[in-house]
Length: 89
Length: 376
Image 1: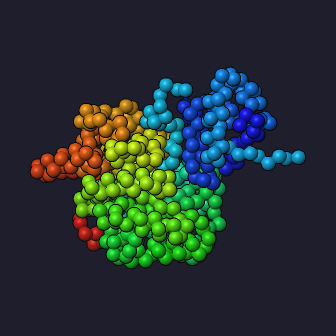
Image 2: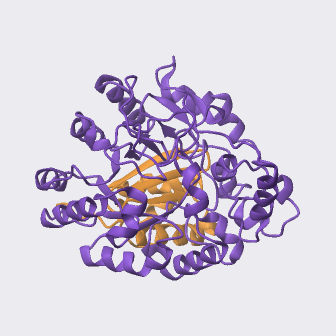
Image 3: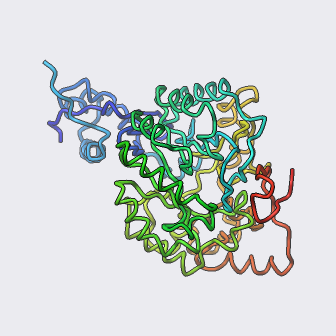
């Protein structure tokens, strides 16, 4: 997971909320809860970096917390909120 | 992590609804005996196209992800397609409920070209007699015809929306097979004693044994069947059903009625649960964020008579609307409490024949329904 290049799926809208954010996938019509503001920050930054690890570093997430982020991002990838963008030359 | 659980956070309310129900018109060609909004005749005060567009602009600004459009029969509005198109072009997904009468081949082809659009065809029996007993003569045929049109037009997975009653609870497997046959999705929801349902609930609502049957059927089908999270009162029976285990009224959902009045949820069209009108200064946004009613609903609610029951955390005391329109206390058991506490109270109340609250408005067509309701 840490080496993967991920980004927010273009079919997903993020709405900030006090607990984090709501993510709605217009394709699957699924609503997903992002339960921490830091997860929201990371998700929004994923598209600007080549890997999950690079994103976590850029967002100043302490390495001790990385396992919980890997779990959260894996779940978001499984639900289609995150996708692997096609490499653009 | 934040100290409060997600459900507790949601109970405290969100900056905007996750989704909302918007009944576009009180006009309807049918006269279903359980109609939540007592629909039939159009109301002259219904929102104009310009007013409806202004509401959609507000919803877009609030980032409301989707609206559930209903009625009445929403396709009876002349600007139906205009409003739907405007919504989806502005990133507001549309799920609309229809009885299918006006969903002809042309409409089906038009709907099939639109993104962010879901169609729910209401059907309350897998055969004509069962369905038409509740929804009226000819309604089964009309609904099936609409489904055929959607299938022919290649619409994709539309939804078949079923209100579970005493008479169709044994048909759940057949409903699922019907949906599967169309490549459709089955959605089952709870019967509420709201609108004309106040008069048909006693006859139609599932028995206590049937509640258990519904629970186990839903548990067995998991995410494969949609429920609008409407059966959380059954969670007292054991393992929770999929979805949010809470009442979302005024917290994560609400209702806009055809004349622009905003209620806590689609099942409580009554002054006691009216938060304001989209026509008031500040519009919908002000109502959602600052109305006294919605602020109250977001405060911690008392478990009342249910406080000593071990199941309260699971069932949350059930549905506010079901309690209100059966005359039960809002901080007590649901009339369909699986432990029978609601039935006991209803039986006791029946002995004193107390008056139950009546719906705020009745747009039923004269003569189109079996039981006369109190007029405004």
